[in-house]
Image 1 (cartoon, rainbow, N blue to C red):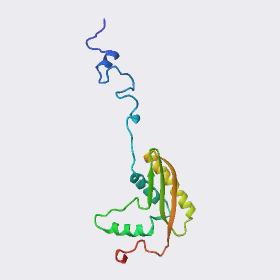
Image 2 (spheres, rainbow, N blue to C red):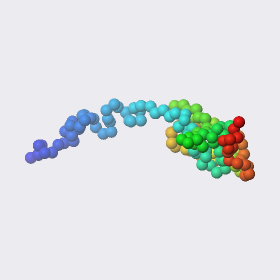
Image 3 (cartoon, rainbow, N blue to C red):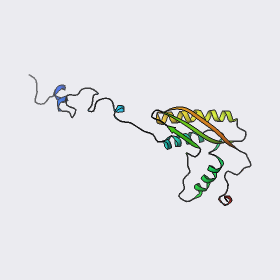
Image 4 (cartoon, rainbow, N blue to C red):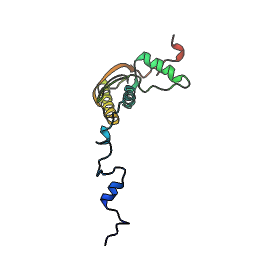
Amino acid sequence: MTDTGERKTAQTLEKDSPNEGLTGATRRGGGDAASRGRTTIADGVVEKIAGLAARDVEGVHAMGGGLARTFGAVRDRVPGGSKSVSRGVKAEVGEVQTALDLEIVVEYGVPIDDVAQDVRENVIAAVERMTGLEVVEVNIAVSDVKLPDEDDEEPPGRLQ
């Protein structure tokens, strides 16, 4: 004799569930979760990731050209101003691929080819890991060399 009052079979459990009649991994809406919408990533997101990854490379002194760094230094000193991690980075983001242009300042004495290669590898790894986008190119422009006896930034009073 079976106790049907207290014990439900697998078929009964399926019918009582919110996904009535469905079995296994199939859910309402059909298909897996990855195919149920689209994710878009803004250019600025990729620029921030690439900027942080480039700054992590030994031999990179700063990002951006001279004028951008000067204005950035002034903005950094203003109360409430924040440091721009995407300074010196330009990204073009498509649906599955991205291309990046970086402008860097290197420390004097470091091999520029080695620094550029390390920046390229670090940026590609970080962007692909964090966004899932394929990085098709990373163009690097070395705009300056930081000499040992140079000040880091121009003081705000010298901007005239």
